[in-house]
Length: 236
Image (cartoon, rainbow, N blue to C red; front, side, top):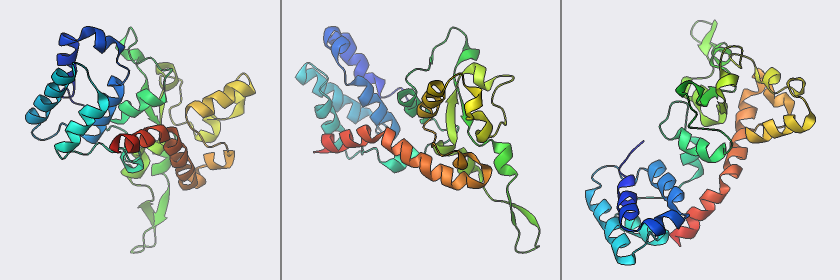
């Protein structure tokens, strides 16, 4: 979503290539500053201060860099709200999916083979759920608005084959997650675990959409709990 966060890393890589190659904290730095928008607004002074820190330390010391950013009055806290407000089409969604789906190849040989975000409960299914219009008495009001349909808790990452012709399309969750699609119980379990799907098949029904979303939000928060904990530790 932004190249500004790379500028201190370019300086670090140019002047201290050996340290750069062995530093395990660079991915965490990138994720945190990109998701929280730490370099939005007027970042020039902030970039200079981070570069000064690298120059003084002769190293990219994550707590020091985070301290510089916080001293500039910019928040670095990733809360459950920050994660759960991600949605279909948001610039930061793939940042989280890169950490979530470790086994997916984001740089295939052909652009058409990149993984893609898809709705678990398809748009067409959710748009078909209507409420009674109190003014007319007719059942013609959408029950689920686009933000509800597009929220991260209704999104999953699919391979190009899964989301291509003959793939998931509008298949309802009760069919897509059905045990009958998999060669073994173990494969079925792994698939549900990978996508953080609530195990109760009753939640895969359209009339249980809201219960499904609540259960999956809890699973997503648990998935990223380590990040939220690190945020607190760094703040201390």
